[in-house]
Amino acid sequence: MKKYCIFLIIFFLGCAATQTIPPEGKVIQEIIISSTFDEVWSKLIEIITDLNMPIESVEKVSGILTTSFVSTTIERMAKISYHPEVKNYALFSNCRYKLNIFVKDLGNNKVKIKIKPHYELSGQLMDRPWEIVAHSNGVLEKEIFDKMTLGE
Image 1 (spheres, rainbow, N blue to C red):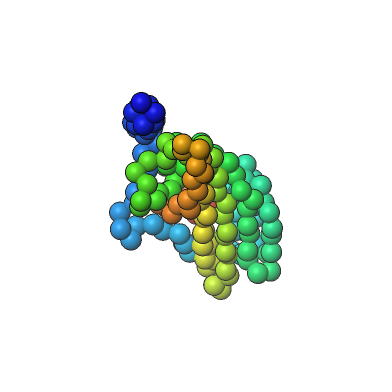
Image 2: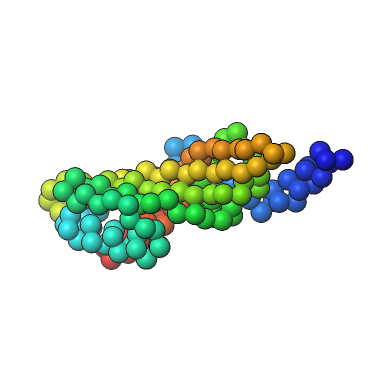
């Protein structure tokens, strides 16, 4: 009976937490923008702040910006990440992510931005803890890149 109840829970919750899996080779995690380094850096700080992502560290000289972990919903996590061995995220109760962002001045008013997200999910199933690290599907990066390039 216990297994049957767990099956029903997974079945009904699973529909809302199905992942978005990207086509092979289609995750874009870096772009080049026509602008100065200082303009890109300022805009990036503004975007991260507008997205309510706490900044953990800033090293402008090195071009590194790291956010603190941000908690999110299962639905949002399923939209921005995937794990090839997990069909849906309904089993997980805790979802969080952080970003490592690298900004590099290429000269001639060209700046490269590279975003490396880190996604974590955890939860309990039958009194056993579950934890996984998921992969990016490029959705969060695209959201940030779109905001960066609107002014171009």
